[in-house]
Amino acid sequence: MATSFDEELRERAARLTVAFDGEAWILGRPELGVFVAVPEPGAVFVTTLQETGSLDEATARASEVAGEQVDGTDFVDGLTAAGLLDPPAEAGGARGQIKWIEGVSPRSAARLFGPAAWSCYGAAAVFAVSLLLIRPDLRPSWDDAWFLPSPGLSVLGWLLFGIVFGALHEAWHWLAGRAIGVPAIFRVSYRGIYVVFETDLTQIVTVPRNRRHGVYLAGMAIDSVVLAVALGLRLLDAPGLLDDLLAGVVLSQIIAIIWQWAALPLRSDSYALLANALRCHNLYRTTWLTAKATLFRLTQAEQAELAEMSARDRQVGRWFVVPYVAGIAAMVWMFVTGVLPLVASLGSWGLTQLGGSAIGSAGFWEALAVAAYIVVQLALPPLLALRERRLRRAGELL
Image (tube, rainbow, N blue to C red):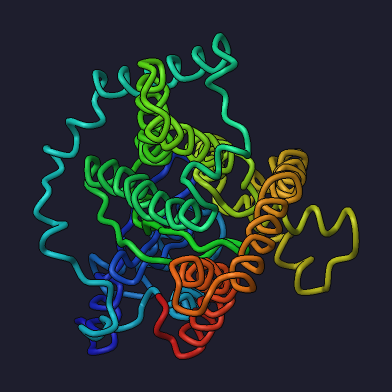
């Protein structure tokens, strides 16, 4: 006869999803964005709880699969500590569905990611690379960053590029997720010192790995299309200002694509793609701990954490350190050779404008707007970091 404790445990276990990703079982709370990888006995334990609510029976079945005695009470405590057995979130705190987003059906989204669509994305990438190889005059330089009559206007143009192309990139991730039935959440966040748009696709771990690749590639796929279109229009000998604008678009998209491959240490799209293809669960953390152990010394807690990582993650992490460090070097190179000189040039221009323009003139306001933009770029990431840390401490960031 079931007890009240059994019924409560069964009810708590019923909130969990159980999915197999080809190497481990994923237990999750999709509405909270919390997922953990466990071996098969852990999955059997949870499904038994969902069926019977009996801790003893769940322990017995898990022990049978494991071939040794498991501690059911300890496993339940671990699930509780991970937040998987928490009660449903309050309506105001959960990541709810947005009606207009949910209005796009998976069937409609899938049309953008079928064989024909991927053929178009591939053709766009080949076309863009071919043009850049055979037409040196179409290759961008850092000078193309100033594609409008003044540096100030160019900065505002880059801000617009960031909003439009950043939103398009993330929208394609969301659509690709929607195409395979994975809900997503948009947000503004930061990576390093950069403000970014993000699409939270946490629930993708509930689908087989071979269906995830397109979701991770979707952003770069649409970036390639934009790049190909801009290069193609430049072939038509557009008038001066339009050609300068297109050159700016080409530069922005090439930077965006290179960034995705260089920013492995910041968990970029390419990191997600590689970690998925390599069948890893926490390659980022494993690689970081491996690199730190090689260069410095791990704390006792970090040593224990690394030892608990999966054998696959530790095996891959040993060589993944190389592209990880190379990515850091590439990002530093981009910053030193491109971003830093541009910012210095822009700052010099702004000081000249502020010092030589009458208060209230167009030049004065333009320089002031540029100064505000630079301040926001430098101040917003740490402010977002503090906000997320505060929310985590309050238990509101799920």
